[in-house]
Amino acid sequence: MSRTRRPISARVRILGAILGVTCVGLAIVGSVTFVVQRERVFDEVNIRLQSQVDRLTTVADQAIPAPEETLADSADEGTQPVDENFTPQSFDDLRSYMRSVVARLVPARNEAAMAIIDGEVAFVPSTLSGFTLPDDGEFIDRIVTETADGQIMIGTATTGDRIVRYIAIPTEVEGDPSSGIYVRASDLGAELQPVTASLTTYVLAALVLLVATGVVGWFVTGRLLRPIRDMRVTADAISLSDLSPRLLPRGDDDISDMSRTVNSMLDRIQGSVSVQQQLLDDVRHELKTPLTIVRGHLELMDAHDATDVELARQIGIAELDRLARLVEDIDLLAAVEGEAYTPTEVDVAALTARISELVTVIPGHTWSVENVGDGTVLGEEDRLLQAWLQLADNAAKYTPAGSPIEVGSSATAEGTQLWVRDHGPGIPPASRHRVFRRFDRGGGKRSVGGSGLGLAIVDAIVKGHGGSCTVDDTPSGGATLTIHLPPTSTPLPQPVRAGDVVIQREAFE
Image (cartoon, rainbow, N blue to C red; front, top):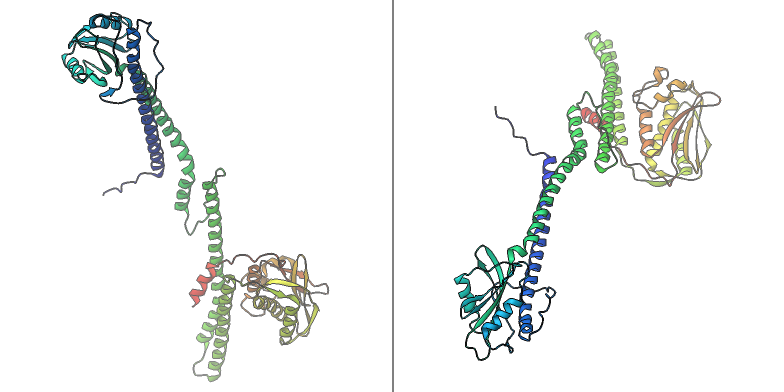
């Protein structure tokens, strides 16, 4: 059985990218620094070599040699002419002049000098301040060839184990047929040694920096990615039967905020699943009774007795009608819970007048308007009217026939209240928190048919408008159900798509 190759982890990829960018950056900085420093050394060497032309003139004038000049900033590779002319005037022969030049112009550190007369090395400095140019025939021939036209030349050559930068100055003394060349050279390897040492130090420091960056980056990326690992572990632990695992937010960074957002999402999912399961249990319970009744009557029915058949038929149709109403109420509840309301300013007085017209057609009670509010409320008029009318219909079902029922409204700076006040048996305080639940009829004490979803529909509509429903006692006995709506300046909440209810609606369809 072949094992699936595990991909490179995000931690390693992130750290590799950081180290790669750091390495490239350090290499670029080091290379640029080395090139700049090397060119500066070449400039210094070139200026020192070119200063020898003026110093030869000083020797010719029998003056004290001038000190070393300040280094400048120009350098050229290869061999190049220097547009200078030199004609000594104070010596009778070339040999004496060249001896004086070599004796007076003492080479500095990392420098060498020699005098060539008629193609042969005639004089070299006797001091040990610099190095000695080897008696390299090829090098001598090159210098003689380069200065054959009488031009001063600067070039680079390899002599022995050294790479030198040199200047060759052709010289002549009037009346002496010999031709001389004064050669001054600098050891480029020695001149570049400080730069090379600096580069070596930089490379070692860069390696230490990369190692330190790798160690610190390993722990930092591990800490930053820990919430993601925890998220993966938590996701693996979550199942439909157990939605309780949660992430542990650490810190206040973006990843910690993501952990809190995921926890909030899991809370909503768990709540949705719980409501879905509760709805399934409630629907199963509500369907069981009519199905049992129909099945029992069909089993006991005497097919040869027309009266018994008609009675079973009437009971079956009645129970099927009750099932149809249940499905319709479930569908309506799903619609109002998942609906996106189009808010408009609804006149409270006009809404009260409209509800007073509608409730008069509900038989068995005396209806009256107790108070009319003056103001507006933000919402959808048809849904608000539907919720208010549902409260009135609920009051008519659970109060004795002939008893009065009042409706009323009020509008203040704190919000708008729409209420229905009956004079029936009332609702016990212990049961008031349950009357707006699905399929709940106040513990059965007020059960007078219906699906048990009427007040749940009211609660869903009111919550969609950012409000709430309350139950209070009527002073003379009975219950007062009130819809509380926020002020007009308060925006409506975003609609919540109740996936649990939609699932049930699809099941019934």
